[in-house]
Amino acid sequence: MKNCQEYQEAMMDSFDQEFLLSEDVVQHMETCSSCSAFYEDLKALNEKMTMPSSSIEIDQDLIRRAVSEGTKIRDRRGAFKGNLAFILTALILFTIAALVVGLGYGMALVALQILIVFVSPIIVPVTIVRQMKGARQ
Image (cartoon, rainbow, N blue to C red):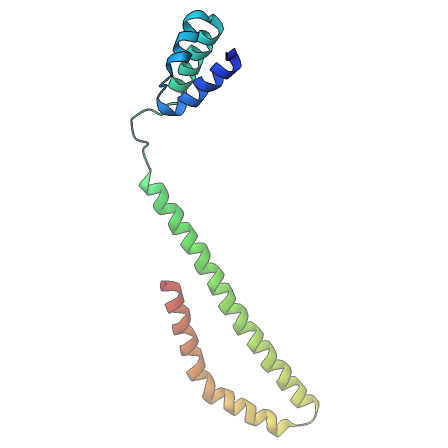
């Protein structure tokens, strides 16, 4: 013979099966007011937990704005990395130039300046195009 706790566990197990109770549980509830009350409480709880059939409205504009903000943040981070690389490169070149002058190699510095004058018109537009392509993606 089962006790009330075992019958109540059987009622909770039937919770996922739309409250299909076995015959012995139904017979027990007819004679036990405690288990009958437990079953009614379980059904009431189920009704409170059931989601309404209406659909939840999704604010598409809010989603679009969030995605847009995320894209802007990503682009700013990418631009920062590109600018940081440019600054570090310039710093290295100026350090090399200062070392060359400090060691007395003025002619080498002039040659380096001539090289920069001819190379920078090629490097700068390529860098700008890469940054613009990165901003579009």
